[in-house]
View 1 (cartoon, rainbow, N blue to C red):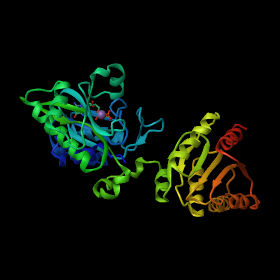
View 2 (cartoon, helix red, strand yellow; view 1 turned 90 degrees about the vertical axis):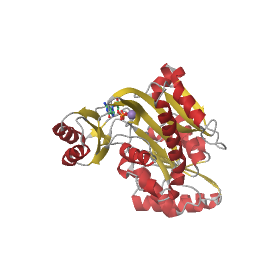
View 3 (tube, rainbow, N blue to C red; view 1 turned 180 degrees about the horizontal axis):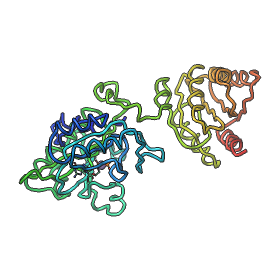
View 4 (cartoon, rainbow, N blue to C red; view 1 turned 135 degrees about the horizontal axis):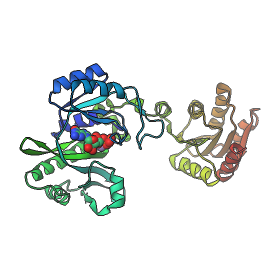
Amino acid sequence: MNIHEYQAKELLKSYGVPTPIGGVAYSDAQAAQVAEEIGGERWVVKAQIHAGGRGKAGGVKVVDTIEAVRKTTDSLIGTHLVTHQTGPEGSVVQRVWIEQASQIKKEYYLGLVIDRGTQRITIIASSEGGMDIEEVAKATPEKIIKEVVDPAIGLRDFQCRKVATAIGLKGKLMPQAVKLIKSLYRCLRDRDALQAEINPLAVVTLGEEEKLMVLDAKFNFDDNALYRQKAITEMRDLAEEDPKEVEASGHGLNYIALDGNIGCIVNGAGLAMASLDAITLHGGRPANFLDVGGGASPEKVTNACRIVLEDPNVKAILVNIFAGINRCDWIALGLIQACNALQIKVPLIVRLAGTNVEEGRKILAESGLKFITAENLDAAAAKAVAIVKG
Ligand code: GDP
Ligand code: MN
């Protein structure tokens, strides 16, 4: 689960991490009011969408009058902001974050990720902040600093100093960097985040002083831990998620929309991935990933069909079930129920194997409905691809 920048900043603030003074606004009038309240002479108006790359896309504007805060907010709210991370349809801006503009001296990158390779929380930092970290990693990999945290020991001060030194922070900024990195680490651990990214982390000037400040923050939380993270779960913005994915999760289905035209209904995440691969191997393009899980009832299968068919691109559905905990007869009943209830017009290619397979096949054959059956995944994928290609 992702959250908005303003939520990330409020969260970080509660961990003592310095962020600029600001407030969220849902309208131009509210934005002007927030700017008045926070005071100052320059403000940053930032479109709140889950995707990054807003700066380059015109979603981050620095202005110096309250009137400009109002106008900029008006021009952003309600628009589809398209960034290199949103896809061509963009994300609708429903609110903006207004903050006091900072006097930026230099921008850095600071991230914490759970590295699957080492199975450890890893600090990633760079002196080249503000821009795409992927670009920095490609063009100048030596400018990416990594520090691995031993879970049995936790993050030590010397590691924070090592990272800070490597990206060029020194003097009075050093203790600030140590405190900030440790707070970020504590936040990530406490809140079951998988990833926290601060880009830019900036050195800003406040009169004579120099201060480290978080100017942008992104978090990704572990969905499997949300049950014990009430405050985080409340930050969920369903408008930012695919409505089909939200509906599917409500039915205990794991659905992820893709951009092809062959819908997929499979049991088990591994088999679902293999099914996508098989379709691709035969020259087709899957419309979705969908794992119905174990013990899929006829109702669950019907819901799965309905969600898959909500995607107008779907020209055929591949059903691939290798039943262990599942029962092929239940799947077959579910498919018949779905065909009748949903008036399914697209061809269904069905591959059943495992528990009660004979019964399942019999139910399909005697249903009077036109199912295209296949003996194995490879044959089923080949048939599905041949059908959509006409
Ligand atoms: P992103 O493009 O979605 O990652 O949005 P960011 O919040 O990172 O903003 C992009 C860029 O806008 C930053 O790298 C900064 O250079 C600039 N920016 C963001 N906040 C401020 C601010 O408070 N003051 C100033 N002067 N520039 C800012
Ligand atoms: Mn950023």
